[in-house]
Length: 437
Ligand SMILES: *Cc1c(COP(=O)(O)O)cnc(C)c1O
Image (tube, rainbow, N blue to C red):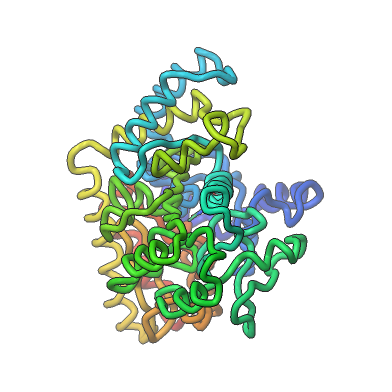
């Protein structure tokens, strides 16, 4: 069924189109999260009806091999039978109590076991809440207001984090999103990813003003970009030298790179870690945590306020626990890497055959195909990619039954449900899509 319906797809997306007509009247841009609108690739978004394993099915019944995986969480594939069975049981016990449960303890113990830099944690309901709260805590702990982030790194949509350096801005941030108060934007300093000198000079001009450096474990939000040798360690030592905290945002990289995230791979110990996506197994869960003396400043043991009606929700905790259990099983990551490797290693040969310049950056089970003839080290490099070529590639892949993230600045997420057959079909689609690109 998958192959057949995928072929038909191009002719029937009428139901998605009709749903989009209704949605644009109800939601800005027709969506509840911007990148879903397919704006960067100029297409019409599909409305999804269901998903199972590596496949996703739209409202018209077409099936696609899914490489978005809900933007990262679905690392086991969709509707994994063990997760689904646990969730059905959990539902019968009531969906929210507004009180503590043993499930929160179980998931926290699993997370802390995987991240030795965390003595304590707090659960929230999204990655945005995790980073926003971690920054508040860093500001309270250091008594400083400014933060250093990197252009092209995404940390959710809290005001302080929606700022990136404009072309001429040297020291202070320039507002990137209207609605972010300029007074707050000025507290966000932007550095260039993979450029320790840019971080150093921000510290030098603000020697007692920086509360924290926040960085993605392995950036996936400008496409996948790998830290250069020594970059993460450099951030650790500069932060320590200037009395700032190091926050590693592992919302995407957390259980995606390995069981333990980028900090385990690069052997860097942050003061605070942010998590999300995979730890909720497809339900809304985020977390932040770190050193005990910092975490104990959090309400109610300390004065820094943070709360959530649905934080630690029992159904969401159940999905997280079952997902991590399956990831912890022997051979899970080996299988994930093997599938990822077979897929991405097949692409350069096809690119060469069709004369398409591209760079592939891989971090664990996520990767990006950059349409560029040079390696991408930072956001500026990423912006120089051939975006028109990406759009064509995306559109052709979709017509061939492959559902990719609709932007050059995103990562492809491989799951444990992707089969050899999926990979072979995907590479055939790449071959057809690269032809004459
Ligand atoms: C997705 C993401 C976030 C935001 O998480 P939400 O759950 O979408 O709020 C923060 N940081 C990183 C690195 C992310 O990839």
